Length: 374
Image (tube, rainbow, N blue to C red; front, side, top):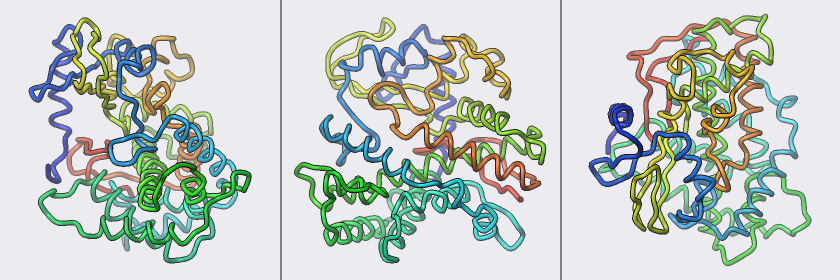
């Protein structure tokens, strides 16, 4: 894999799905699912047919035990609820710091930089400079370089292991959290987990939580501002309820998590297609969000559709997944996107330039290369 976007492959799979009668196999054997009912069956109704997993609470490919995942989700929400981010964030300073000399914000990185600043109190609340420097290095060299832009895999990338080692050493120096103590940040979250977790394990969990907090939300914020400018929301008269619908429509058309992966734990069937134990299943979130069987004029940008959704549309909306593996902080992510989107679109005038109107698909679905000037 190299820096090239996976967008071309994604569109090929979706075109095949449009002609297929139910789930079908990709050339490398993975079952591709682009039907909302089949997706819900995998994620919720028949979730026991799949290997338990978590995008955030895992060590390597192995998820933490269910009890630890539940505890981690609870403590994550405690950390987020501890801070009044709306009143403490200076949007003007953040935009000034992230803009170049010509006032431009570069796509595929500015949103992550802004959200890193927004969630700074939650990530490493009043921690020393060395730990926060590691967070910044991880965001730049891994979240942006790997998960958003993409890096040539053959090129050695020594900073990743160095940053992991740095996190490990910093966590080793900190005392474990007491069960009833305040949970103020992500560092507290990983230190509070009981069980046989080494400092290296906790460092990996911290990195995954930073990715989920900063990466997914930051990329979506770029989409929200880009589409908001293009569709006339960039005005001092914009209302919070309009931005709320804008955020939801943005996540429908350009879901940051453009696919969800699962591994079968048993032999069974999905939508008439046989699934064997060990088979991999890819749920095409992007395809489901654009299905003409569920959405009216699915390729059109219509935030007003969120004024009244049908039951089928609610079931087919999967920007944060569904079921037990759903992102535990999705409510906080939506509130952050609504707040930041409203501040930017109401307070700044802007214009957008892109090279080619093709999203950039890697781990995350990012806007096309270009810039937004505010």
